[in-house]
Image 1 (tube, rainbow, N blue to C red):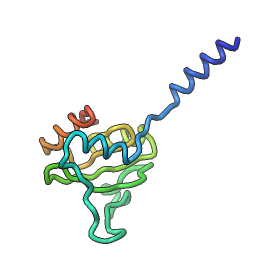
Image 2: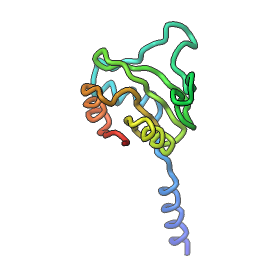
Image 3: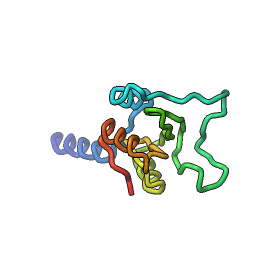
Length: 128
């Protein structure tokens, strides 16, 4: 009986676990792939990108926690952190962009060097 209960708990825990990655780990993975990878700082405090936009089509979806800009080889794009992988995938599909765990990479599609970076750094394809 104890073995069955333990097996049930292991199965239940593995099915409900949402794999996320923190910001520093994500940045470290990207930097290991391309040393030109860097975070773009806003010109002044509070002036950086946000989850909300001027119109609903410019806003990032539910569960958006933080947005920041990065660049690889002088090409900039947005990196958006979500509360869960499920919400990130949903937003990546809406935007037709890339996602890795609980992160979405916006403004990457149609830029071949950035698309290649996503494949090299994270093994990703778009969520179309």
